[in-house]
Amino acid sequence: MSVKSATIVVNKPKATVKNLQFVKKLDNIIDDIEKAEENDEVIEGNRRSSYDLVMIRSQYIDRYDWYDTIFEKNGKYGTKDATGKVLLPAKYDGIGELCHKIYCGNIPRVAKLNGKAGLVKPDGSGEALTPFVYDSISYMLIEPYYTVKKDGKLGIIGKDGHVIAPCMLDEITHANGRCLVIRSGNKYGLLDRTCNDLYIAPQYDKVEFVDMEQPCTVTKDDVEGVINESGDFMTCEEAIDYEGYLVGEYNPDTFFKD
Image 1 (cartoon, one colour):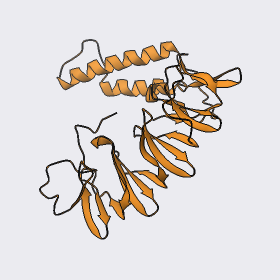
Image 2 (cartoon, rainbow, N blue to C red; image 1 turned 180 degrees about the vertical axis):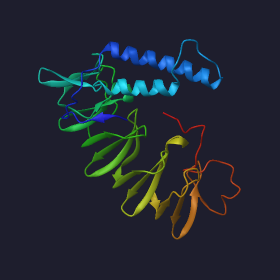
Image 3 (cartoon, rainbow, N blue to C red; image 1 turned 45 degrees about the vertical axis):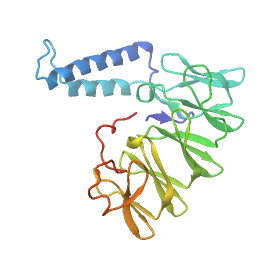
Image 4 (tube, helix red, strand yellow; image 1 turned 90 degrees about the horizontal axis):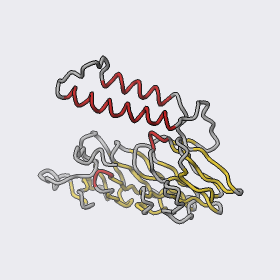
């Protein structure tokens, strides 16, 4: 995820529709070359590898400011993307973090009304995905979620605005690129995005990740175990011959889930 505060100025030329078209053209060329490389084919006239083109793409993107632009109308604020398309109509008191056109795409945006934050569809309609009840909403790095804050407590919502974890948490940390560890008081829980956003409410005394490919272990009342795909606790002995998914382990079928 790539976002910036509405108060930060990026000292680069603003990206245009032509810049976006060039990036999309590069994407198509890179896809074709990657497929050819996988099949050991030679593309006539091409002297660059897919790696070279990916580097060129990255450098080209870095030359421009792709972040949303805030505009004002009748004392209210909205945003447009790098192509000039209206994402949020000018009907809000303030705008949250600004998104990068390439890296964020069309994820919902954060706006503010009457001192509270809400999540809004980025299609110009102004349709709210959440009520404006949060003190703040932040895009999560890596994970497809948002951190929300209300009355000093943290929570987690999805990109469609639905509540995954209520605002009762004290801490949210990234564990292994697939799971979030959450804490409320001295109890811990988990959120596993590769297991249909499985949410385990804080109830364990300890959560540990020892190996990137192995399930995490949890401890409760001095008993160590793991959690299966249904959210049920299993002792380590019970899990020895278990063939289903265990929370935290590497699952190639769902690892790249949006």
